[in-house]
Amino acid sequence: MNPDWRTRYELALDAAHKAGSFAMGHFEANAAVEWKADHSPVTLADKGAESMLRTMLLGKFPNDGFLGEESGSTPGSSGYRWIIDPIDGTRSFVRSVPIWATLVGLEYKGECIAGVAYLPAMGQTFRALRGDGAFRDHRTIHVSAVNDLSEAHVFYSSLSWFAKAGRENAFLNLLRKAERNRGFGDFYGFVLVAQGSGEIMVEHGVHAWDLGALIPIVEEAGGRLSAWDGSRDIERPDVLASNGRLHQAAMQILAQP
Image (cartoon, rainbow, N blue to C red):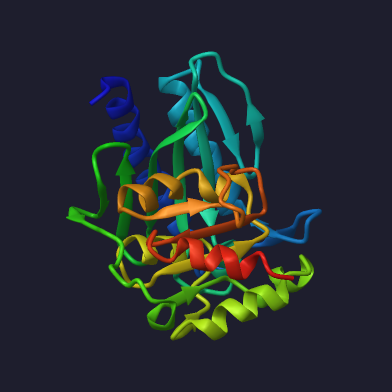
């Protein structure tokens, strides 16, 4: 295992737990909510947690790049880039729903190599390092073996995202083919696929900071993550994560008008 990867991975775990614990201190505390230009919410907990992550990560590796949802992009010269979402699921956070996480992803020369999703309100940590497997806390996780779409469970965040993108019909067609669908949105649908609790997570309207930490977790668990056309581009708004066996079938449905 590359020692530089391992060192940064261990730092990511520590930083995610400390920043997530800070955010947890504001959970259900009636934190003031601001609304950004894209109509998404942000709180002092988001800003404070991201500031902590930036300080911890770049304090240890000042030549690394950094991309955070709240503070934007800072280029680096080392080939590494941290991809951060201090509170993924802020809409849940501000409504006292415990399904939110601090996400810390690590990219090396364009490849997402490590990811941590810390769920403070649920006391869980999903994590992965390229070549080392995926874990929930200390237990190895793996995607399911379901290979028939009619037996699949599909996760998503909100129908509104597909409606805004003009892809509502394709999304609903996918749901009709599956056995069950559940609105376990944001990061949570991805980690549920990774641990075999469902087969597909489909989304539209994501950003790089939503995916950087989750790609290694899904893939190290044996799954597949791509845009709806199968390409690998974390800057695209459309994303499909699966157990791998149902990826092609899901893409074919989502490609339909």
